[in-house]
Amino acid sequence: ELDLTEVKKVMSCCKMLDVQSIMLVATLGTTFKGGNDNLNALRAIFTDSGFSRDQISVHIDAALNGGWWNLAQDTPKYKIGVEFDSISVSGHKWYGGFIGGFVMLSRILDESSSKTMSSKSSVQYIKLEDKMISGSRPGSVAPLWMARLVQFDWEKEFQRCLDNAIYLEKRLVEAGCTQCFRNYLNVFFPKPSCALCDRHQLMTVCQQSQVIVLGHVARGHLNVFIDEYTEEMGDIFASQL
Image (cartoon, rainbow, N blue to C red; front, side, top):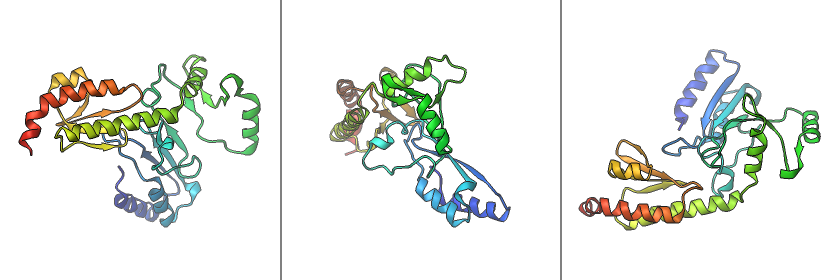
């Protein structure tokens, strides 16, 4: 996550050097920790440093958390064209995408382009407007992805994933894993054996592993993992009491 104190120092230097425009890449969900930058705080720093809205362009790398962020009740909500200008989300993570590659337009520049887009690009059978560019990918990519967005009730999917993440954390803590903690859908715990990491495809850095509880993770998967993990790590947990 961006250190706001360091951002203030950089902005102070920018003003002294007469910098006229700034592009910032913020993060919404780092891959391992699920860390998020505070866009409201960053915007306040820009304003306090004397930069107008038109002088700042903010892109959000929302690879991990961007898909579900607005579905959570306790996350700060950001609006394109206000707190940020463009965003990228990894479709294979939250949405479980089966095919790669599209670019979604960041924002509509004026009312006339909005009217033109609405009149010419409405896809009636999925009740969405086509605001995507396929780029070098086949032309079928955009409609396939638009269909994916209406394939599930994503609010219910998020609640199921959140319940599963809370369940996993609770079960591991009850089993004596005092170092277990959760950051939304990311659940962290001490690294088990390499064999168990490979068996359950755990994301591991140094001595810490995690499960990112997305839509492909079912309660039954978690129960199998919890049983195997606590059996392997039980003696270690007991020695820490």
